[in-house]
Length: 211
Image (cartoon, rainbow, N blue to C red; front, side, top):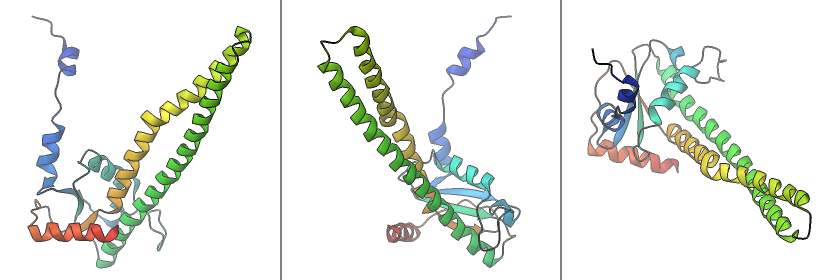
């Protein structure tokens, strides 16, 4: 029997993420995330105090994981499926999804400001280190190496922000903003969503009002 290289076979496997996203979520440019629940605490944490509700961590993870690969230009709609919610519970859920992701947006913005301040410090440090190295031609090799170490220490952290940290924070901020703007609807049973031109225009109008 011929021995097959399965590792090579798996490495050559092609992703179908784009077609899967279009098939399962997008209709007329609107992306609908369906969420089946059996009770209120599937979305709202059972540890929350009344009046200070927060989202269930598993629900947040699910929402972020599904929404992340959906193209940014597609407005998001969350379809909560289940006939187990009262009118008050629906109101609390919709409000807390908005408020919790606005809070997460604020945390990301705070981290962005901290990282940007650190980036400026590292930029100044790398410039100073480079200038000192250039001005110390007359020094022995050993002292000059100190300025080289300083320069690359600052420069390495600076480039990490530009190409890694900054990119990840912008992606997190964009996702938090999209989820803070998500339109929440409730259905008793699952059905594939079809959006009319009027519904699409209304959704875009609601998003414009939030700006």
